[in-house]
Image (cartoon, rainbow, N blue to C red; front, side, top):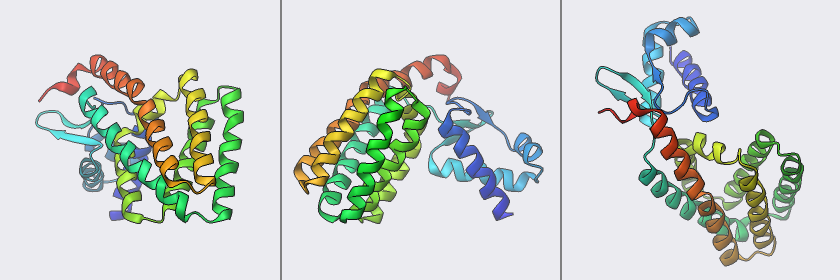
Length: 222
């Protein structure tokens, strides 16, 4: 049963992250049970797990609803993520081994092709690998966990912002400054570059959240 609920949770989490399930969409255990050919108990457990992670909200008379962030909360989370990611970059500048730096640079260089042909999906995948390389290089598991939890709440909106070519171009350029700072072992420059990189998408992110709130008015019901 635990395995079934975990399988369903991972599938739904992926759909939320990809935008297949959008903020304001409802999820009910009866439909999940039928879809995955399981009983309602593991379906209910999967929903509760998603609620515990903050991806869905359980509401009276509405069941489970994919959480939609308000623009104010989105900006607050973006600012928090910027602080966390900046510290990870600073730690990585001191702690990454030469082979890890080389791997990070390779990911950055590979992402240039995605930018050139405006391949958002490809860039998003490489962007995830790029940031993960820095998180791993920071060698601070607790910090990495906080970043993952925050990014999980923001994943759909963040991916949507990278569907804009101008933002894709800027993101790659900003990555370049982070790469150079880490390569030189300059923790101060790494922290500042990463902080600026995360916040530079903040306005786009908040605008996306506000737009989605307008198209999902039911998500604002108590």
